[in-house]
Length: 79
Image: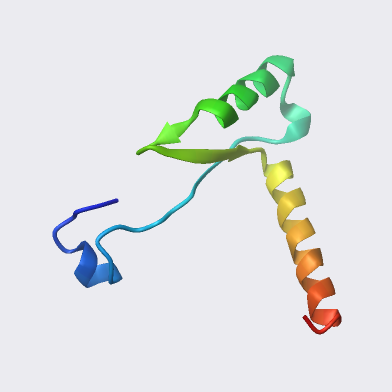
């Protein structure tokens, strides 16, 4: 989003940085064709000149679980 008349008043900046995420289905329900379609979407989906992260629910869960585990380890280590 850029150059909306009240963007700076609302957000403190004229342009905002954002990341889009498309979450589609579950791994176990995707056949080979759907997996290939998701792979294509990962490589080609662009909105407003920005890439969109395309993942399944299971991939998102795996990634978030990994990140939370890493955060917990960093806290335990005092970092």
